[in-house]
Amino acid sequence: MLLAFVSCDQMEGLFDKEKNETENLCAVLEATTVPQAVVESFNTNFPGMAVVTWFDKDGIGFCALFIKDNQETIAQFDLTGVLVKTEVDVEQEGEHNDAQNEENGCECETTDDKD
Image (cartoon, rainbow, N blue to C red; front, side):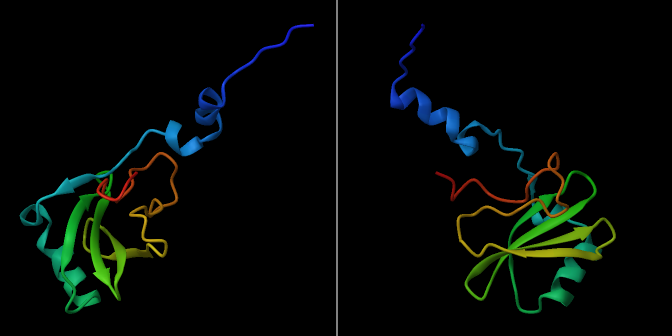
């Protein structure tokens, strides 16, 4: 019979999936590089709101991170400015699901609120 002992500290990482995942964050953009049609669509869909951060969504669109009703919100647009999806971060952990539900797509979120 063979017995192996492993400390709890070594086992912790084995069961913590989030610690072992690699981040695939979308590229942050300067507001001046976002196409005018996308900016106008944001302003039409979310009047009075201000974008905190713009993201390049894998070259297939753009995401706008903004605050609405004291909650981080992400709006995803296609390349022509059509609103694709809106997500609200209810838990306020700074994490948003991939807007296209693709496991391999980048995530439109910032690292500021990460542990």
